[in-house]
Image 1 (cartoon, rainbow, N blue to C red):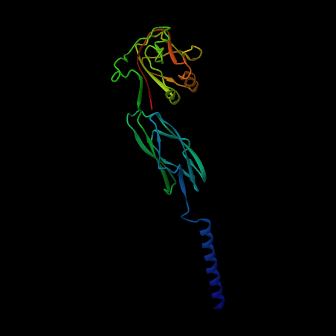
Image 2: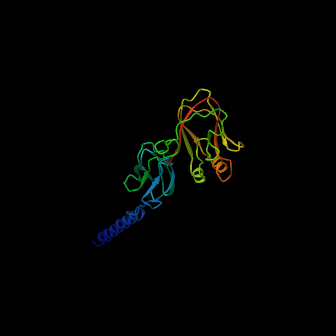
Image 3: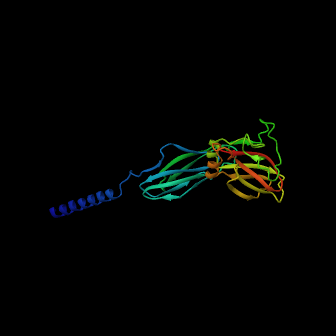
Length: 246
């Protein structure tokens, strides 16, 4: 009887130790997942852009859902810290939009951050006839460097672009029509010392001109006469408006 009792006590002790060992290897309730920055949202202008998030977790995770207008640099991560680049497309929908990026795992432990994007706002440089009736469409002549020169003093139509606009702008949009097949365009500065784009071929409709850091620096009005200039080598077109969007 004593021998049976001894073996029973040993068996109970082994079972108890086994349970404690399993509990130590697979603790529960300590999974963590976080997104930084710790703000509840990130926002983009209408032109789009990118932001970097930091995902910290002690388990494997993946992107559960995101807005269709958002691209991410990776669809998931593992134990530790992962940098996630979030890119927003240009908002062409005509109104602001909102969504959320949700990350998590199969146990539905999740973390999320809201994503906002403003609608595109049009900023007129020329052609806002509703407010400036004299900014009417015109046809520049070939080799006329004043017709499309952005200078209030030396240009025929366009105002001077302020320095802060140059350095904050990425793209100018030109609305043109009646473009002839032989239309050939040069983009330079007012001193004729630098050519930024040569033999540019435009089509009727909207045409974009990328403003690089070099263009912004060299065409800023701080240096007299170095305004942005577009000049026709040949051909004809009607220039209706110039604007940029944010």
